[in-house]
Image (cartoon, rainbow, N blue to C red; front, side, top):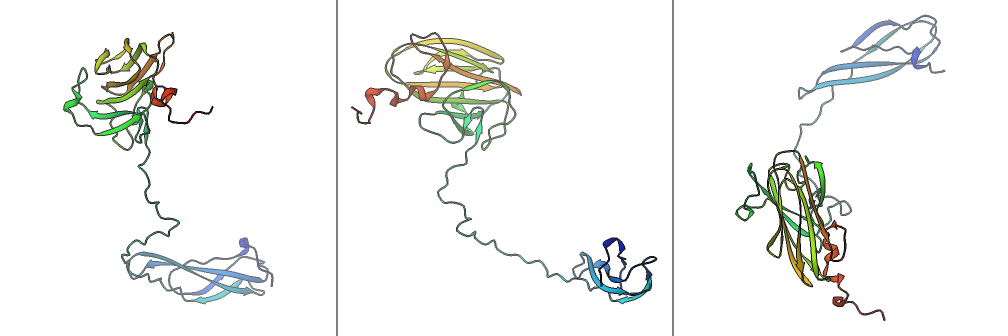
Length: 276
């Protein structure tokens, strides 16, 4: 026989055994119909349970039909057991020898590359100027090739290190190689205060709470030089730190980048054979 559409099917929902008659409407065409029994209760562990059972029946020429059915028995689930985690298959296991997790912030990253400035992060109390960082213990380290943080709202903290976004200090240290000796100009802009040291000497000092900018200069010989920048952020949320350099014989400042002062930038020191 032809199976009626869903709209023509009847449904009975109850708990326990069902015996009786139910109407499906007038002029119901002959066919095979579904009867769904829904049972609710609790299983052997006292957890809520809902079960169902479907039975098919045929309609001949009457719109009232008798049905008798036992409700489905509640499902019995085994008691929960503790199982030890199984090792991942070789193709899903975490690769061995994986390097440190790479995290980034406006002040640098947690993974170093050759020639980076190393920035040690310190927690500081509310102060009016840079504290003596040598008396504090760093809470983490970040790395950067340049310091170019325009005035911005800072809320992210230092992912992978700390969520601190105010009352912290960073001490950047590194080396750079000069191939063109002469008088170099440096410009530092920060919010809050900062200091620039070249070869251990103060070149710029704009310490304090607020936004500051200053230019300093120093004659540099060819060779390796030390650089250090101390910076602190006071109360939330805005901050800034930009470090620039002007090379001898030029009139334009550019962001100081350690890659521009790398040792390999001096052709006379190249370890690669000549192409001639």
